[in-house]
Length: 345
Ligand SMILES: *Cc1c(COP(=O)(O)O)cnc(C)c1O
Image 1 (cartoon, rainbow, N blue to C red):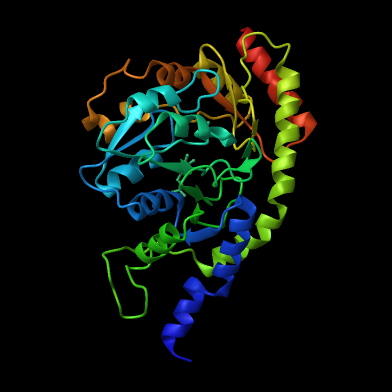
Image 2 (tube, protein in one colour):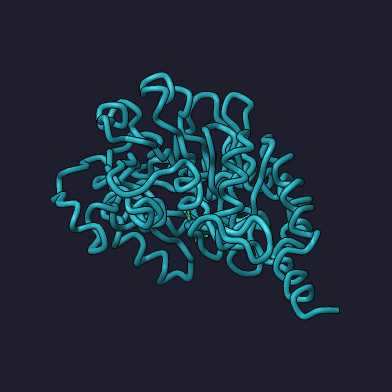
């Protein structure tokens, strides 16, 4: 056996194709291409659409930094817009207003595990502007019955270990109905090489490891159950918090069935409350403390504080409560008791 065959087996064995087929079925699309991580998945989706220098891509200011990084890495300009106060999802009217003749794509983010209102966005933007769904947090979530990852022209997801479907290391995927885009993603992510020793475009190395594909295939079989357990836990939090003054519980948009990647409440004086929860041993967090426009990385975009008031308001109030499929009712009651105490003080 040649060394090449052995190495290819580790990197792109039949297990990768098996997982890709299974994940395409899960997301309700025709094509899934496994890649190295979620950020690469977004970049590859954009590059498959031919997006690069001189182009603009519209995305929400309140997202994980990777959405903006992927745009910047193509050479295109990230154009930030604000979000909806209730759902924290992209403000579709603001997104439509930000579209110019240079705009090639809008990237709605299915933040915290619920779908962005993609069909509303579609109705507001020109047909030649693509929708690239950032579905890193929404594996298995649905909107009007359609699964996240299938809502736009092309979608990216991440199997980072902390996501709803997590590998044992970095991994990601692109999903789409379009064979031409899937083919292009595959080419770009494999050194621009359609066949061994042949390189037709300048690509890079972003492959899904065979080992991760094996892990992901095994875990994918259980994802629906895990997501269901998250829903039960989220509903329990919402019920327990209904009579806790000073805590705003998450709003689910009409038509959405979320998968609760994160359960995010809002409280005044958030940093004090978070400090008290941490002191009580509760692993609450903030997703995300700094909107993209106020990060050092994107200072060059030239936005000041106040540019995206809803994103900034949310950044100061949001608090992610511990939520995972195995969380017990007793653990949740303790979280709520500590939170109620912290908010009361
Ligand atoms: C995790 C995440 C990504 C990036 O995924 P990586 O696998 O860490 O590169 C992109 N967008 C969002 C919204 C994410 O949560």
